Every structure is written in structure tokens, then in C-alpha cells.
Length: 170
Ligand SMILES: NC(=O)c1ccc[n+]([C@@H]2O[C@H](COP(=O)([O-])OP(=O)(O)OC[C@H]3O[C@@H](n4cnc5c(N)ncnc54)[C@H](O)[C@@H]3O)[C@@H](O)[C@H]2O)c1
Image (cartoon, rainbow, N blue to C red; front, side, top):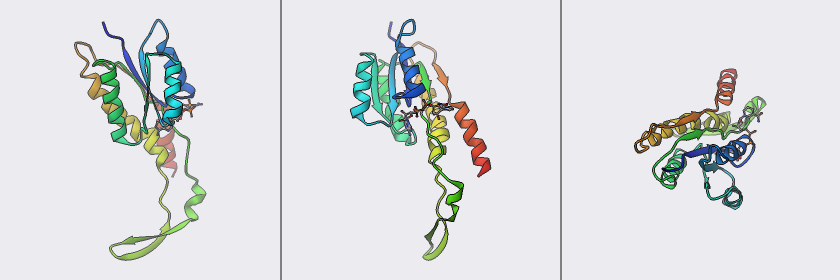
């Protein structure tokens, strides 16, 4: 029988690290992939300190191709299974409503037009888009678990709901 496998995004600190440690411990005893932005020089020693059932995979969840790489690696490392996914990675607001006064010149169809700089939506890309993309990918790989039913998702709904309200506020 193989060991169950989990991916925890943002697993290098805070709540994600606590979930990682919890899943690695008995009676759960999962294999856990920590997917986080932190550099390999931080993530690899962290995973090693948590034992052989923990792997670090440097990932920016807001880049779809990096999430694909994460899931493919986790599935291979877990010997063809994936059971649990926590879309925990997140950042706080990176935009100021007062920043609307900063102007830039844009070139469209050969004409120059001045207007406020583009709104920074990085928080939505990390806290909302990447959550749905991750669930999409989890469904794909968990559905390929050999002879087993596909796993469990723990979603970052609190943050997603906050960000939806924030988007309406903007
Ligand atoms: N702590 C709270 O009170 C609270 C409340 C509501 C929601 N949340 C959400 O819960 C989650 C965990 O909170 P926390 O306090 O442990 O946060 P934290 O800042 O301690 O940890 C977040 C981790 O996510 C990583 N990360 C950030 N952007 C990333 C990206 N693009 N790709 C991959 N990894 C990325 C960071 O490197 C960090 O290790 C966050 O999403 C946060 O927004 C936290």
C-alpha cells in the first residue's frame, strides 16, 4: 500500500506549515509537498528538517505553468497518487485606492493617451485565480489515482470571499 500524498501551497510558513506538520505526523503520516515562493535555499532545508516524507517545490501559484509543474512532480513523487490539496498560499492587499492619482502614458493604435496607471491585481491573481486553477489541476490529477477515489480539497474561501468583496469595493 502506498502513502497518501498532499500538496500545501504557501506551506513554508504560518498556517500552511502547521498543516504540513500536522499531515506528516501520525495518525495521518502523509507525504507532503510544500509549494511556496520562498527560495530553494530556504525551502529545501525546511523540507529536509521535516523528514523524508516532505518535499519542497518552489512555486508561484499565480503562474499556471508553475502549478502544472508542481502537480506533475507531486504525482510522480507520490508514485501515482494525490489525496489532499490545501490552496493556502496568499498575500495581503498590494494596492492603494489613493494610487489612482499616478498617471502614465499609454500607446494605443499609434496614439498616445494619458490616464491612471493600471490597477495592481496581483492579490486577486494569487488569492483568487490561483485557487480556482489549483482546484482545476487537483481534479485532473486526483482523478488519475490508480484504483482509488480522488482526494480532498481545503480551499482558501475566507480569503477568496474577502477579495470578491474588495473587487466590488474597487
Ligand atoms: N493569518 C490570518 O489571520 C489569516 C486570515 C484570513 C486568511 N488568511 C489566509 O490564510 C493563508 C495563510 O495565512 P498565513 O498567516 O499562514 O500567511 P503567511 O504569510 O505566514 O504564509 C503565506 C505563505 O504563502 C507564500 N506565498 C505567497 N505568495 C505566494 C505565491 N504566489 N505562490 C506560492 N506561495 C506564495 C508565502 O511565501 C508564505 O510562505 C493566506 O492565504 C492568508 O491570506 C490568513
